[in-house]
Length: 62
Image (cartoon, rainbow, N blue to C red; front, side, top):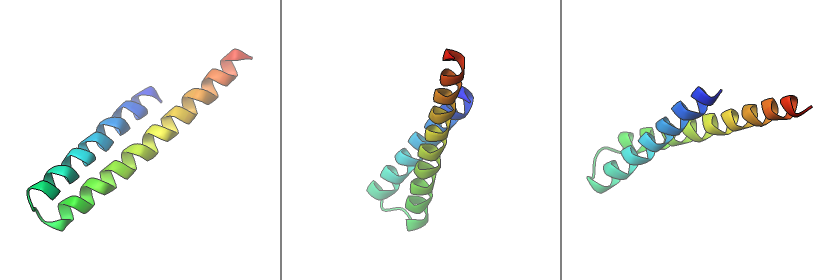
């Protein structure tokens, strides 16, 4: 799950960068929407990875 969190963080940061550059460069609105979708997917994946890590830590502490 650590790999999932790392990949999700990269996807989310790439989406943020894409949305910011598209907004600054007056690109097509589709690129801005794609950037926000990537940010959402990245945040969701990072949260799932963090929850899985916490669950694994809870099981190993017992």
